[in-house]
Image (cartoon, rainbow, N blue to C red; front, side, top):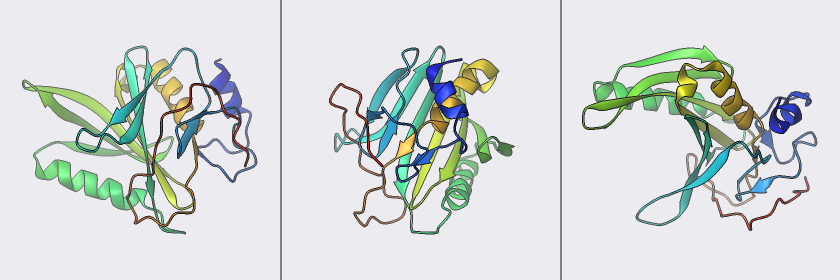
Length: 190
């Protein structure tokens, strides 16, 4: 079992975590609003928006699979994932893309095949977790769609994420700010 899996399964809450949770993992790689337990077998990439050059997502590469995560602002007490998943489903079906909703380890999930160019498609799973004034959305693609070992590894990464919402007022669905880490592991105090 990986260090990440051990740190997650030994906790009463299985995450993702709010930074205010006293049981949240410590010794994290800090990307600003998203922090996570380092794992040497997983590559990490910052996804940058072309026009603005701001970091909008973090991708975790594990074997032939990818988990991309994004954190969004939500209003206190709101559960944003059901609304967002409905909007995603509506948008995809209006483009003629088949969408299936299923119940997964994180609740409601969306399975679909997205066009990736040249007539090719890629199977993906989208899921979300509503925290305190934030939503963490995950997208899994690659072999983890059918390979349970790779899927479990990526789901453990998702459960080990700690979200730092901050106090700055942001409109619902605004991407929470991400920054590049300084290159070292940071112990974030709750």
